[in-house]
Image (cartoon, rainbow, N blue to C red; front, side):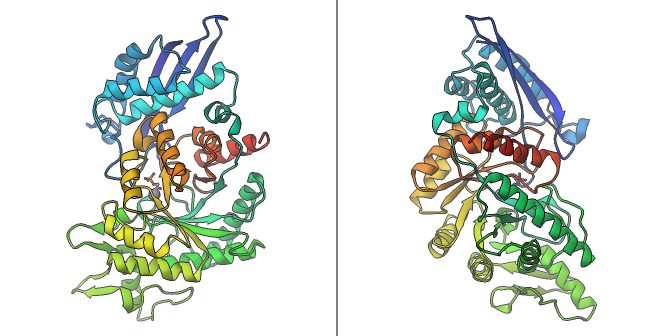
Length: 451
Ligand code: PGA
Ligand code: ZN
């Protein structure tokens, strides 16, 4: 039985407040008490259809405080959940959703609900003396997830000229999780040396990947290819690539085009220096699909949905790109249909902002034959049960489920256990660097000893 629930405000990896929750339960027969503690992540390039993350507003922490959310946990939610059986996750989550009473969890806050939901699961596993992944997944939880490691950061996660958000290495040739992680970490260090040699910045972005300036995606993949080779691995069979375009961030409803301000900026600088654009590593800015609109001061680079798809096709032809996330805007179902038709055989087409871990949107995508993989972020939907429903729906319909962190994270490692529990096969949790990212990887190392 749940005997105590306590929420508090803590800091996340960006130094912003987030929610932490402790749930304590007592076994009636033995009197044994166990506590589960969990914290809530937070995104920067959030999808428009995500459940609502409540913040205090006003001056404290620039409006990002979560005292109101903590108050909801410590009063309304605590009162209703005390006495419930902590093993009844589905009932607990149903109760949480009911208490909030809105479609988007905007009343109590998805961050309130998720903290409590996850902490209950953590507490239940402890009460049963079980590892979390075993409690969540049962006897069939057995598969380690292939890590998709984000080693170059751009978009909303870094203040560089890279318009696409994430460039990942995927050690597909690895035979075990420790092997996969080692390969990724080695390549990460080779990449750092290459960047240093080229006089590029090696400061990191929000997810631990380096955040230097590149003019376009082709340049990044060429650089990653070098890093993989210098580390002694084969590009393609040992290590493949993945990207998150986070295209909703680039899309403008005004003109229906995708905007590349960073790429335009690097071109402008090249022009000023009277040099030809650097074509090393493929300049994916051929006139065929880029409109360069020159006004008196500003050059713009815009792409239509069709041109975005052509760009992805070119990149996939040139590099072993096995996964493209949010290749188009979260509302462009037609564009997504075309993208899926053209590329589904070669690559994973992952819906993140498109699906927001929401079974309604995933079902819609399936009906429209859109994408072939779903990114799972527990805080996009707000309870563990709903996230598990989304995973189940995906897997039953032949869509891959990729368990994912957020750009704002904590040292919490719940998603590592979740990935193994559901045999997801894939996890996206940043670079092999920075504590809030390695917390997940290190937990997977521990789990993999027992698989
Ligand atoms: P976010 O980015 O956590 O900032 O939303 C992660 C992603 O888009 O996959
Ligand atoms: Zn994404």
